[in-house]
Length: 90
Image (cartoon, rainbow, N blue to C red; front, side, top):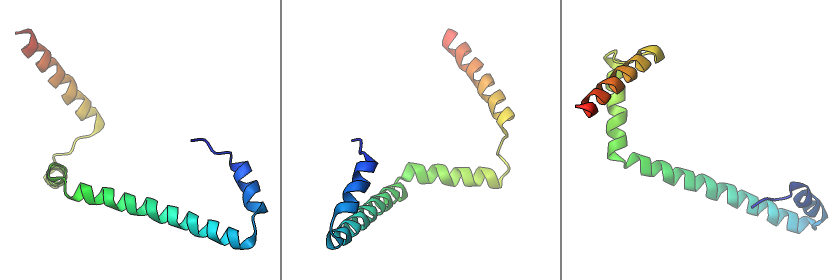
């Protein structure tokens, strides 16, 4: 939904002070609600066993020096792609 922010600002400028306080409270509520939803999404990530396993493996790879630069990674992907094409052609 598109909102005309200029119109919104104009309306805010015209409302009585007590209503402006309520609008401010409501904006605070919306921000808090958005933050709470973001935290809940993070909680879901903590329960994703596959994601946790991947992060742990990545951490172990870094500690063991199994991290490659961009060029090495591209070379690996090219080689692997060729291997997969050969297997498919068999």
